[in-house]
Length: 338
Image (cartoon, rainbow, N blue to C red; front, side):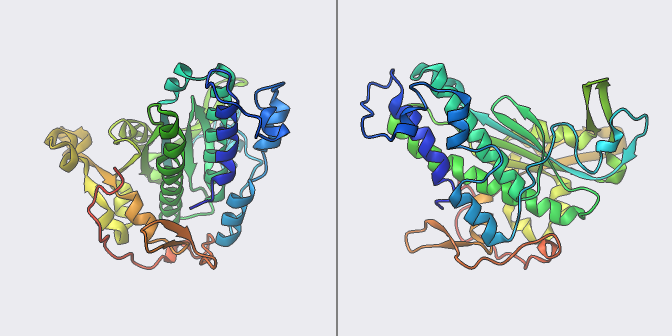
């Protein structure tokens, strides 16, 4: 889709300039060579700014009419940050998402730690920037990955669900296509994502301060926050697994949800959590994110089947994202993202 091309460039430059790669890098620009020679954090920030989208991703955000909020703080969701150093607890829904980036340890087999640092931090910044475009709140960094919330006091659950799925799909495409191309060229094992997403309603989620003093954060206590983390471990490479509440909140997307047990051929994988005495059986589903992405108003498919951005995307603001038209059933086999 080209929206991450500007994030791919510093990764390619760092790999090309790595002394262990055995490649000459005279063709690189001075700033690109600086990613290895005389490298410092300032140089990296010039290549991948902290609080500015790179050009192609910025164009994408403009097409959608969405503006990222770069003024977030970890562990302090803006709608609940007042609970810091408070004895108050609040009940409020939230969509929880764990984005796990796997395989980056293999980079140490071929590159110096400096190169690995550039690669992993560029990927993480691409994830953060994309998350912010879709209105997500980055609650915590999990190694190379992220723990993210979608929703809050000024948004209903259904648009929060759709925004979370849009982010997860766009970022998964970046990892599956753009990063795969880079690392397959280098002959190393692929880096991939596994994502888990679940929704807890007001009755299910408690917000409050966890920890002591400044060793603390405002976070959630919820079965569904815990299940999002557990679901990502059931996802396939570059796969997304969602919980039953996500399915219930997006009935127009039902054709994109298939119980995990259909893939694993094990009925034990149908339910991610059970309370037998309460007859509570909570189903987990594989989400066909690629077919979902192809049906988004901002995506077009060329005659070769490649995804392209539409030049005139439909603006999906908070006020109209809940009114997404029903999405037609996918024409390709379900596991077309493998």
